[in-house]
Picture 1 (cartoon, rainbow, N blue to C red):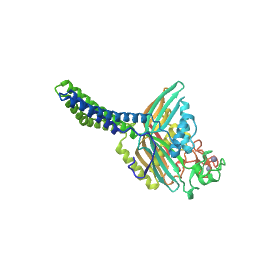
Picture 2 (spheres, rainbow, N blue to C red):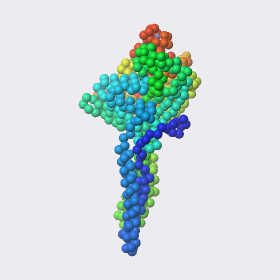
Picture 3 (cartoon, rainbow, N blue to C red):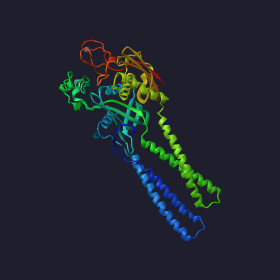
Picture 4 (cartoon, protein in one colour):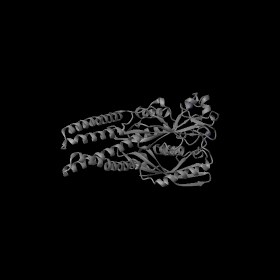
Length: 495
Ligand SMILES: [Zn+2]
Ligand SMILES: [Zn+2]
């Protein structure tokens, strides 16, 4: 994605991939060596024979040296275990915390209340099903790779969308042992808020890292009114405000596909030609070899190129069992949503909107009692949702329609997911679509640092947990989240 402007890449130290050029050089030297040595079978002077044999042996030795080097580099690359490095910054720090959460149940420190709440909901769902989820993410291996970052500055703070290809291991286990295991290559996205504008700290709301109540940054600097803890800005920022995974192959994986296809197809064509010509007979061996080399390079190379291309294109469309996504509609949906929303909010960012949507749906699906969430205003949830254990958003979203009712916008979208769910004690994977209708009051700008799990009452300013109660415990007025942010008014699963 590096061809979009405004993207910076932070490199990661990693074992380098073996150089495919060395493999090719090695093969070429050996081929030439074998050709020279093959003149042993011809009726020529023995001095010439011995000379050519010597040349052949030397060429083969050089070729073998290259191949051994390639093989060693490749082995070192395969055995290299990449690790997160806290010194690289927030992206790595939070990835490490995420692994610790799944391994030891330690709650991440560097994320906001909503992300931590989602992890807690997922654990409750798994506990209820008698399952344990082990999940670990490590950076994908390969040269020229690192963490991508797109920054956006708003009036209140800067938000970075950071992403990198990771290898993600998922395994589910019940009391009898593992029931499901899977390794996939994903892009892991972390949305990070940082560098708050000092002049705006009284308007920026964050959840208190200690008690979870929502307050302005300047108030937390004086001491949280609920738990009394005093925070400095560096305790509150940077913070991960959203996390999601999108299915995607790393460049190392693509390189491997390419080399593999070429090697197989070239050596395949060479062997077929060689055997066919020897069986047919009548030609001197050097000529047979030469003809086979030509066929291997020209025909085999061409075939290999085509096969590699087909395989690479296939991986682009292999979304891990994801349902078919109409690409044209997908492209125009993004544009339509953006254009419509920019009319109401000049700071509208599609990435942020998409991230919000992902967390809302995930929360509504994983909550045991969604009707208690202030962000869920739909009818009783369909029973199939209650078996979902893990959700991966695939970046697939199509707009079904936008309807205005006064200041209230109703937006219907279809979203594409790869979900893991439980059925009769087994864990299964499924490409699901979820149709969702959201609504919100578009006349009101969303407050920076808005939280789904912790809100501040527009009536009295009191902070309370909107996940468990819809009425403010201080002044009793009912809380309408659609006045501040998106809420779900309809949700339907298509499996
Ligand atoms: Zn507090
Ligand atoms: Zn109140």
